[in-house]
Amino acid sequence: TLLNLAGVEIINVKSHGAVGNGTTDDTTAIQAAIDAACAGSVTGSFDGVTVVAEGITYFPPGNYLHAGLTYKGGPLMGAGPNLTRLSYNGSGASISAIGSTSARKRLNIKDIRLDGTSATGSARGIDIGHCYRSLRALDNVVISNFPGNGIYFVRDSWIMGFHDVFVVFCADVAGAGIGVDTTNADSLLSMEWYNLVLEINGRTGTSTSGGIHLERTDMSLLSQWAFYGGTWEGNLGAAEATFTSLQSLGIYGLYIESALAAAGAVDGLIFDGSTTAVVSGCLNHAVAGHAGTAFKFEDTAVVSLDGPNLHTNWSEHIRVTDSAKVVLLSEGNLD
Image (tube, rainbow, N blue to C red; front, side, top):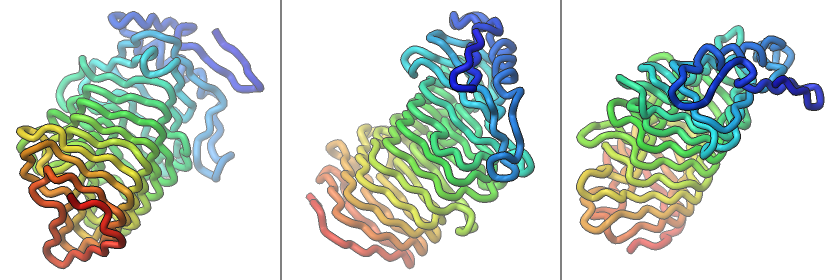
């Protein structure tokens, strides 16, 4: 059904033939609904180049099997991640949200679960590129069971907000829960994350950190990321998260736990390259017998550490190597 609320078109994917039973291929029907919702898109009305769509694509409760969708600038909205599931059965990106320098996108996906249980290869949850001024880019979204990255930044994007995002059981073949294309992502600036939950992403025996792995050699291209609250727990690989040459990073009130002593992440958080950061009010917990380091500072990283709460189960709380510098503003609780 096509509704019009206050001049905004809301297009139900079922009006274009989507079934949502988890077995019927709904790709064509869903993409037709997205195309219809974005038929009135206007390029340039927002900031000169960003595409602003006039319609919203709505997914009522159901399990929508698909082979890959293209985001075109109009919001995708479900009935909640426990009710609306988009199940991907391909090997690329479940949702490709990549604009261009001449046709940027405002990303807005809300109240949906992206599921990769049936995906193959190193399939990813969502590819993001040339998305700008997207203050609710992902909002109440669960991304689960993708063999590759849950969220992958493949091109430059600026000024984005992510709210209540849960990435779980991703990257057991390649990548991390959240990763970046170090070759093609020209600049990733001003990214804010509120209550980000990362659990059991990544794989053992790799140098990639399972929860987040952000790495750029040019320090001017990866800048102004902030994380407020959230939980990063039980991820695998080198650490819960690694930040390499990320400028003006802020991490506030985060709960970190390496919950899998035998197969879990080797370390808690790694700051290396030329990263500059403030880490404040974070609890870094580990299970008994963990052999890793809670906070590791390497290369020329410069970090202000304020009030850390570090659990006694870590074999080492803080390690500073190379030319890294750490300012301990307040001791917190170093068990």
